[in-house]
Length: 363
Image (tube, rainbow, N blue to C red):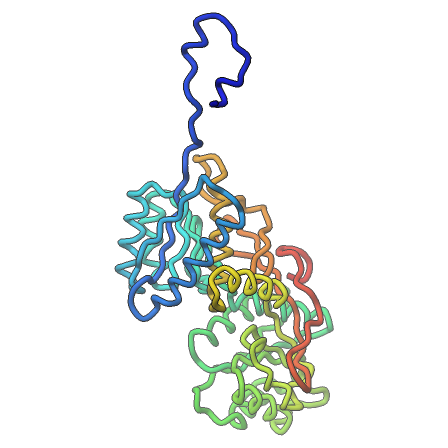
């Protein structure tokens, strides 16, 4: 018996004019992923993570439309055009900065918000949000902690590459925001001698330094840290700062100069919970970027619940993500709460401060 037959029966012409119950309209979300080519396994895992986000939210009025970018800029642009033609409400993806740049034009022309996976904040702008953990987020968090402990004179030593330049830009921006003196930036060749790089740093900072951020990892980071004191950076020795890649490196504490170094990274507890759910659903461990896809899909399912005239997510809302709580700002910048970690003499880094709410004190 249908729902209408259970309703009270009334006389009059209105009874025959009742229309049958209709299902609510469905909303479409495009997933721009590399589903062919060298990155296809990663693309498949990210698609699965997005589907897991949809399943866990129980939203039966949303359809995901996977669209293959092939891992190319032309493929990303074409996928964005196809997404617009299909009438999607949100685009989740694509993967890289160059693909995001290519897809942004067609998406903006169609007024479709983009939740990209890249951590290149240069791609962010009105209507385009970058959900990867960015160098700027890491620098802001760890510099803030060091400044709270009294640090005023900062420096960066990093290999001269895209990551090193992003760290440098972020450090300069933070120093300007806090009215600190310009940081000393030393970007060096990948094969440069740690001793010569450290001597260059000491020469540029004759008055000493309070904190030095290292942009390297592994053995290179250990060697650079060990070279600072012999170069004359002592009395007192500067606090060493690092970045999120250190969270996956248990070898750093082998170097005495790195013990106690601070870095910002996502709280691993939320990641562990997601990893367990993903493995339970798909019988395999997720790659790290699967968490970004899960978060982006979760945000997207909230966007489609907003009125159609709204061009993007609620930018005042905090979303609990796999890699920490996030808040999307109208200009495309994503604020993220990151935890603080200390390098320990033995074993894994130790979390010394939990992730704050994005936009709050310490974030």
